[in-house]
Length: 483
Image (cartoon, rainbow, N blue to C red; front, side, top):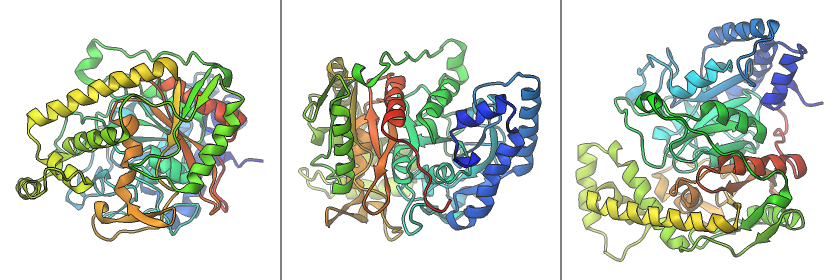
């Protein structure tokens, strides 16, 4: 029998409605896991348990009156450290912001708690949310529960660990470079990167910043695809001035069963070779689907090259993160950029140029991005989803030496730059497309791997519906051994 703390959030809520368990008991089940395992894993780095107990008691009173606020009322959750939660620190792992105590809730916290979710803590992140590992000088290192010598992913690494180990049933992460999708893949849970702009990131910016960032989105993480769908109904919608005049109505998934889906599959790419055990899992999934879906192709792609997609993404990604530079950093990068040969298309050269690019050059890159968005749209006239890896490998060993762009990981017996796998982040993210990561099994090393399900713009519920069908007919979340 599945432990209470590992049930999907909606299953926990059904028990609440049936009065078979209380919100206080659900919270305690999560806190028991936190007490047993957090010292080892370091997933939850800020906690306010008294506030959570009061919230659970309030949920129990609502259930006693048969008036729950939402399908997730009374369910325990944590949230990524970068989201403001009034009275707690928001640091992004940067010691400069160690004493930055949020005065108000972020929009994501406000919506989830207004829906009755019982928030008790915040989860760890890498410095400035800029790594596929999760470590920083304030809170230390978070480890993967499937193998504590390995990274849990990033930047929503603590989020994925909390879900995988039953410390929380719901999470909200953010994603500009696979920061939801990568940890979900590494830790064997579900994550959804929404279409750009439909989930407010108000209250999830660096201190002093209020403008939204290009590419970056906030989105749900959970142990079940159906939980993702429930959270999207809560999270989607504008905030601030836009909320005075705008509403978002995501179209429901028109597909009901696998036979309604036209599926493209992409196993690897020249820009980011994928480790064979991950390819094998995706190939196994494709073979499972082949006789169940309407049609399946290993060749269908949008009509642009993977090389162009990668260069355009790195350019726009690093332009989007360039405002983090100090004046001294900017001056140094101007000098570095001038030193690269015009023909140099390496990651470091592309990144450095993007940090200091002229606005006219950004406009040209953005124009090409939007042309490629139209090519994606044409692709989705013939295909409903594209399945591909979320990263180049399963979780890799902790490696905190040097800069991220100088580190390497093992892929098919040789070392490759960790930054190569940004390809799998940008293939959907740069073009504002939704993508869901769902578990697809374990590698021979016993590490989880997830499939990335990409759908058309604003086809979020289609991607999640496909994940729901996989969960029902192929397989879903499995707790890591020993938890």
